[in-house]
Image (tube, rainbow over all chains, first blue to last red; front, side, top):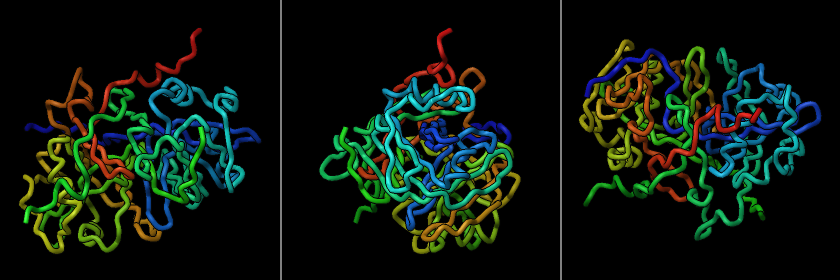
Length: 186
Length: 186
């Protein structure tokens, strides 16, 4: 297959469409982010790329905590809204029902089936974005998103963002089981 | 909805199933990773969490470059194989057709529709994992994965890994257009 060279591009498939939560000037605020990934297992850590000009950034560096909220596809419109409008001009504090955990200043979204409560650990200047690395201190999952005692991604029904086509997608068909499909036949 | 507290967990949906490429002891090697995310736009950067005990890690810290290869669902079996068996014991150098770009020591996989050629920029010790941050110096996309002059994720047909159920999935139905769905009606 012929390859096209596109120059350096931030092309990765898939990326999640998450809502980053922080208290900014005393109010919960939500920012949409797709540039988010797990960073370590022990302690559990997550990274999210945020421009330092963002309203959310101004909050999380003060409180030193934030949340990552994983929405289901039903929330696509609100997720997109939070990616278009800045909390500096639009009050997003009433958009969702909000709850707090042990860190007390990491607001989380009740309507999102999965929430990660994070303590700020690293703030890495990478140029246009800061890579914010948080230690995950607690994980909240809707009770109906468990199957056989394990988190079930098909019940979370996460929203996926695709760069290039700028489209949101849902999770597709199951392809097979990890750590099994590729086992050598003996 | 009632929330269950799971304790601190690395639960994020979705995560990509990528193949990290590096030259180790003179041979290309491939490691499966799901903990990968875009880290900045300018310069374009990507992060991937790797345990320092990994064979791939031993290579990329010497050559100071690596690749991120995005497989399509058809490659699920080989992707899983690369996540089960270490290059320290299995020679994976002949598993794929391999090509090189400007960095000369970042091996890339011809069979993967999308390849990111990366120069090592940061190596952050987060405990169990190192967060490897690479500057993306070139992007290679299969010519048949473009639609209307733009990268088309449905043609890339990326493989998705879901923690919890340990299942691979494909990309699901299109939900809507980003930066449009959530626009306020005026």
